[in-house]
Length: 332
Image (tube, rainbow, N blue to C red; front, side, top):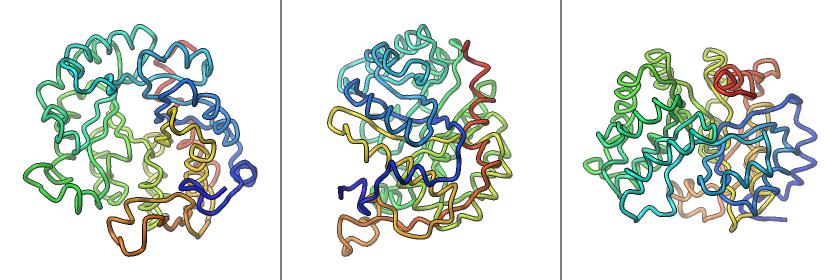
C-alpha cells in the first residue's frame, strides 16, 4: 500500500528477508508512546531482527509496556511532555520522575535540548543552570545521559534563521562540549550523531576531545539523506570509532500511528543504508526536502546510497557497542 512511509509500495516483510545481516540488533533510541502500538512495534522488531530497544516512554505506561515486551525493552527517563504547560513539569516534577525511573531500573536519562525548545523556555538549552539540578540527580542515581542538541543544517537555514534567538549549530555544539567537560565523570550519548551527520569531520573532533561521549544513529529520514551524500566517509568514520557508534532508529509509536509499514520503513531504510550498496529513492517522504525545493511538492523522498559495510564491522554498530556500554549497568 502506498503511504508516506512506503512511497515505493515495498513488501517490508519480504524486503527484510533479503538483507544480508543476520545477527541480533539493539536499538538504543525509540519512543514507544502507547500500549496500543506495542504489538505492532514488536512485529517490526521481529521482522528486522531487533532483539532489544531502549524507549523514551512516559513513566505511567512503563509497567504495561514491560508486560508486553518483557526484557526486550528498557527505558530512558524523560519528563512528562504531555503536561508541558503545567508548572513544575520540567523542574520539581521532573526531578521526582528521575528518581522514580531509577527505581524501575532505568539507567539513561534524556536531556532534550533541541533549538526549537527555546521557543518554549530558555531552560531547554543544554547548559542552562536549571538543567544542572536534574543532571546532578540523574548522576546520583547512577544514570548516563542522552541528549539532543541540534537539528539538520536545513533547519538552521530555514526554521532557525534568526541566530540571535536560536544560536548557530556551532553554538549548540560548543554548549554540549562545555557540559561534557563539566560532567566528565558521566557517560553521554549524543542522539542523531550529535546533530552532525552532515559534518563527520567536525563530529570526529568532538569525539577525539571527549572520551565520555558516544553517539547514536537515530532520526532515520535525516540520517539517510545526509549519509547518502558521503557513504564511504560514513563507513570510514564508523571503523575509526568502533564501539562508540550505537544503532538507533528514533521510531515513534503512538495511538494515532499503529502502522507496521511506518515502523518497518525506518528499519528498512537504516539497514539498507548500512548493509547494501542500494542506489535509489528512499521509500519515506522527507519533509525537509520541501524546505529546499518546495516546487517539487510535498511527497519528495531522499536519494538513498548505501554504504555496504561488511557484516563483521556492523556487529559493533548494531549490537556490540551497546552491549559493551550498557550491559555492565544492568542485572540481566
